[in-house]
Length: 428
Ligand code: PMP
Image 1: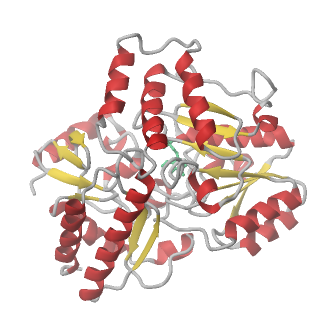
Image 2: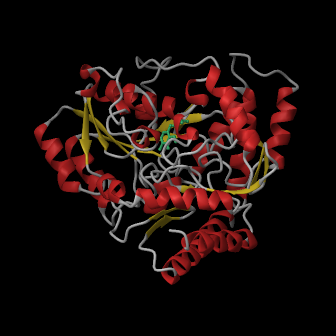
């Protein structure tokens, strides 16, 4: 495939945008080469500036569960835009989407909308601190909760791809309040709690990690976390920015039947518009301004275009009882197909999958935490990534990312992808 125009556009972008991109992972630094510039997208496909069609397994990093330019979402946004794009005043649609979200997700009474996953997680932690009167938080190595200071401590995703998991600019004062635990290691969490008795406000976790590839929680791990939190008066925050409304209507809380105290959402809600949200039971949410003392705000929060997209998206997910099964079946089909061709080609690998999140690691050791994810054969991933691109399949340009499936994918698309992997496997 030819990517000449994309390369030329990147050279122009680099002159006026740091690294040519507005979010680091897009720059292809981890895999080499220059990024693809998108012209448009429809359903399961991206069309780039050189006229190539790519089957998309990123889907805007999660939100396009029903496909790109999904008609009900686009129509809702267009209609709303004609009536004004922002007021900084309450609108009825905010209550409508809040009611729907509260009815879909277990254990939440109230939800507040923000503009990104970063804002959702940052605000959730402030609320947990304000509610509990304690300062420290526990996060897991390799989990990414956005780029606010408290979380840029061994974060996953782009933060680790670029080898600067602890970013300059995060002060020691901030860093000392973030304690790091190993994903899937409950003894490690227990030891941190014991060493910081009565000082920990919350534990924040991706209930299925998606920022070090896809890593499922080991059986019993989330339950054990819940129990530890209860025993020690610690709030459990599920960062469901990737998993919320994707793994099930009620996200990972529903899938694993575990109650979180605060839940963070992101991009999925907005169907591709900039939306995030955090939610909890009344007792906790009533601590937020203007009801309570914990401050949190936003000029564009609850923006009418974002809310219209979100309401259209959530309504479809709520009404289409088959969508989650359909997604999981397609992903399982892809999983079987990938395993088959990699086995036939004698390529060592591990495939992790939960619902419609899946990742392929080129090493046969199980990938269960940040260390094992980092030990995977990430050199092989680079060759794999470029090979797939050449075959017309777009996966995330880093081994530390999950793939997200969209229900717009057909079984023919999946067969096309599996055939591409077979071709690429020969060069690994
Ligand atoms: N939490 C998780 C689990 C995420 O995956 C991300 C982004 N991929 C974020 C938070 C931050 O969201 P945003 O990029 O919208 O700020």
